[in-house]
Image (cartoon, rainbow, N blue to C red; front, top):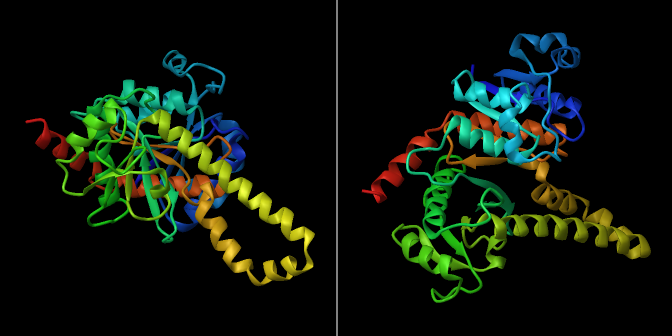
Length: 329
């Protein structure tokens, strides 16, 4: 069975929702769940009939959200440090953590290491689009200052993920900019444009609306812009939901209409709901690391584990290394 390590103590709400997600995942797929944290607490949360699939690793500390990312390097008894060490030593195929994302990224990069020819790992996330599919966006927070070569590497990694994990045969790549013309953008994106143009699937610059219209499959940007895009999109989706609910309550006709549209609203919620995706893969590091939201529900953790299983059973890291070596000769 594939071994997936879960930082069971890192979430905002303690281990309960994380363990809940592990159990939900085990109901659908059998794998070895390696839970890192306070063993006494964790053992009490696992039903007897699932314990054969669970292994416990004791960790006495938790890296809190108000600590610096690099502080985690000194916290060798923390749950995320021990989880990453298991990945480094190849005792597990993947790590899933809803804890301190900066600490997870720093430990994965410095302890596990980057793939050959990868200068900067990138956090990738899936955004819903109007076709009912998903658009992959990277980077969304790992690197706030990027050089053109970093954006080129993100394009290679994003294309590989789209092919291997999302099963898109020829994913269309777009470089996020303030206009479609090749002359648009800042100095970094203009240089990156020339580099990414070497890729057959590159369609040119993409504007912000193209993240959601389904015209491109992979959007490339630096982590500063990507994180703002991600947080803004989450805020807009939440605001629209609240606005609709507010106006529906004011009108009897709208109430009747909303009942008829219940299935449509349910589908919309699924498309924009973070829980449906579960987590964001950190691309460019050895092994597999899935970074989940601190407020993850059991459903989100379950889907993060499914992502980890799919990633761990793929050849994506070898493909990334092979592609990058081809362009660095």
